[in-house]
Image (tube, rainbow, N blue to C red):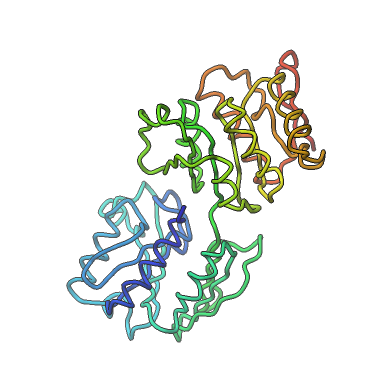
Length: 336
């Protein structure tokens, strides 16, 4: 489960270690519509190889062409960080494939020893939130802890600040039809997803190649992941042999959301098992979202996936919801 940002940074460092000149491109600001949000990164190697993305492709093509034809100094005068805007004029927006009215500003940074990438990669691999500050006049970068309120990217004077940290993770137990819809939407919400299902038959029709699947036992997967406050665990199998042990570990972790699919009666029996056979304390049991999801009258797998994701996002964003209403109430109540 390697976050995209970390993969870009690791590519940067690997290419520099191999003797290549490399420019790190970061989306600083956007106006109107834009293909990628602020903080998105791309590594650009002197021979035109890239890792990551800052647009739908046309801006990358322009930077690649310039890098190949003229080298790093064409992008970064005096081998120092530089700013560049795309889409200011209508013809530029059309040329570079930006949506109507879209404009984006990029930071172009030549990677060197002052970029402190090895230290940054090490901290991100430890799932730390890091604030990287780049002096645009000297190219010297420093690292410090990122705070929850830090913007993804910010320019103050000639200082470029980039808050980096682990993406929110999602561990999904079960690879059935519901899981497929669940993961499709969660992927669009930028979760770093791992699906776990040791049942061979359930993996035959899995058609989401960008979402990894493991056949390890769910409890082993949860233990290895060591869920932190940016991790959610959702069980979707209805099978106690797969769900219960995974839930036991997840409920005793720092996971911000632990949910389990099933009816109210199934959930009652699940809680009893976790309490009576696994000795989970009430404090841990009270963290279980079961049945998982907000009541929206969902019947189909896509609707059920939407209801669970809505509850999960509410937990991620710190929105307090009342306990699940009965079906007769027909709605979920928001606690002010």
